[in-house]
Image (cartoon, rainbow, N blue to C red):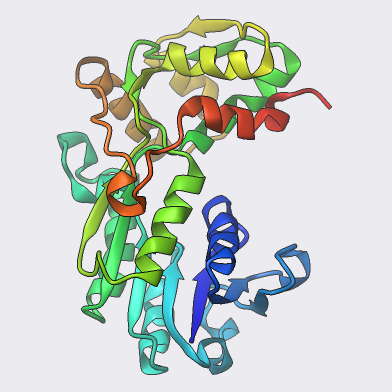
Length: 281
């Protein structure tokens, strides 16, 4: 049988594809632009857009019995079509916000979106696993242009502490849930192995680059003003709430060990893997 991977060219999906192939699985990758996918030759690449069900023909599901669900908009029609064509098992990429562990999560942009994604699957089948990663280390790529140019990073709440997770750990946890039966019916929280202040996060990236990165703490109001034209207000509000709360209650690390049997990758490992993203051309 074949495993269908949606979001196959994204940061998680691409590593999931290579992990599944390495473990002997047959993989079909769904992407909007097959010609640009640049995936291994052993992968069957098919065209389709999760947000537009008219682009996903029944052949996408031929011989597929399980799928990795990327949290795109408009999943209901996709999941309905998948179950109608015999796909009976789903691993869903969600967010820790959907667990609503903190008041800040309730009604946040991430919680509303990912709760709807989860419901699209759990309302149609009983055979699922939900992965709920916390903040991705990849979010730190938003600092890449400042770091490449030598400009200071301007950020609020530098003493707040999060546990950023490497996208490879999320992908490998997804592979485990698709290949084994140990986590069916579970919603699994995932974070990096250690909570680090935002100042420490910048310093770790600097260590990977072999240089100090200038850092300036700004107020929440300054952050809102500087990002208003690039980041939607609900997302700004969500970020500021998260960083504010983790000043006094740092993220509790919940690494992927329970799923993969291995400790999660450190932020230093992530920074080394992404060194080229922060270096000048």
